[in-house]
Length: 270
Image (cartoon, rainbow, N blue to C red; front, top):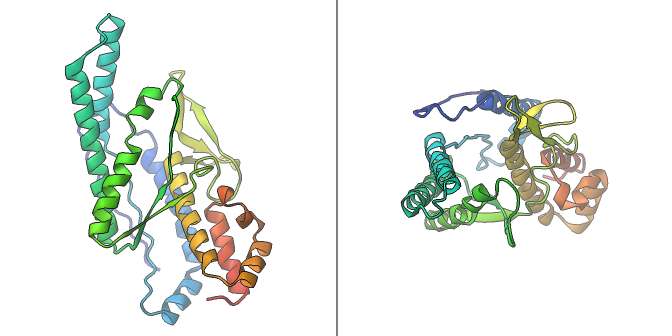
C-alpha cells in the first residue's frame, strides 16, 4: 500500500489563526490509514474479484480562510457601528452578502471539482432543515451559513456532470466519535475565556476537528444504508444481530461500518 500526503497552503490574512488544524487533520487521517492498512489484504481481494472496482481513499480539507476572515471583519465593524447607534449600515451589509455569496459558490465548485477529479459517483450531504427562531450568541453566523445554497449549487453542477446526490440523517453526526468510543465533548475552554466549538474531545482523550469527525460519520451512514438495502432479508438480520448498533441509524458511525464489513465477511457475503 502506498501512502501519499500533500499540502497546499496559501494564507494571505494572518488575523485568523488555524491553531492545530493541520495537526489534528493528520491525526484523523492516521486513523483511517491504519484501518486501510489492516484491511489491505481484504481490499486487494475485492479488487481482484471485481476488476472494475477501484479502491481509493482521498480527502481534501476546504477552508476559505481569507474570505471568512474578511466577512467576519465586516460583521465586527457592523457590530461596532450598531453599538454607536447606527443600525442600518446598508453598504457594509451589501459587502457581507457579496462575500458570503462568493464563499458559497467557491465551496460548491470546490466540492464538485474534487468529486470529478477523482471519479466519484455520489456526493453525500446531511439533510439539514433549520426552522424556527435561532437563538444563542452565534445566531448571526448561523443565519449567514449558506447550507442550502451550497447544496443547491452542488446539486445543479453534479447533475450536469452525471453525479448523484444523496442525503443522510444529520442527527448525531457531530455528537458521536467516528471510532465508536461514544459521545464527544465540545466547547473546549480557550485562554481568552471563550469556548472553541471547532474541536471535539473523544472519551479516550483524543482531539479532532468536529467537521472532520462528522464527515466520516456522514459517509459511513450512506454506505451502511446502501449496503443493507442490497442484502437479502435474512442476511441483513444476521448482520444486524452481529452489529446491534446498525438497528438505530441515528447513532451509526464509521466504526459501525467497519464492523459491518467484518460481519459480512464472516457471513461470506461479497
